[in-house]
Amino acid sequence: VQLQASGGGLVQAGGSLRLSCAASGRTFNWRVTGWFRQAPGKEREFVAVLKWSDGSTYYSDSVKGRFTISRDNAKNTVYLQMNSLKPEDTAVYYCTDRERGAFSLANMKTENMYDYWGQGTLVTVSS
Image (cartoon, rainbow, N blue to C red; front, side):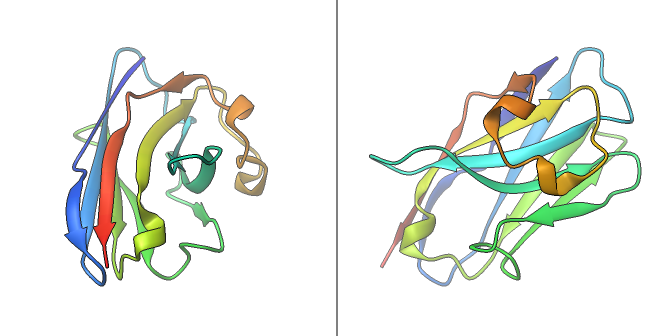
């Protein structure tokens, strides 16, 4: 599986961006796709995750209510709609797939739960 993340850029605080994660290769409907981010000088952290089989989602507390993760089955693509952006959202955003699926999305907050990673896309939020 190859993941291609795109959509990053420079935006003012309060603005919006939509990131995309397109998957190619052999994928399965029971997989989950997540977004993580890594700010300069910080460890990579969980942002959101989606289960392809039923569209259920789970978010970190820091983005809940501002970010929305969704999917387009026909395009095999996951989106991260980011609204009300803050300077602290500045980071490289990575999408990632877990091929084996997940019983509980709340357990999908650590990097080692995932199998494939995209290359990352930079989001910069200016104050």
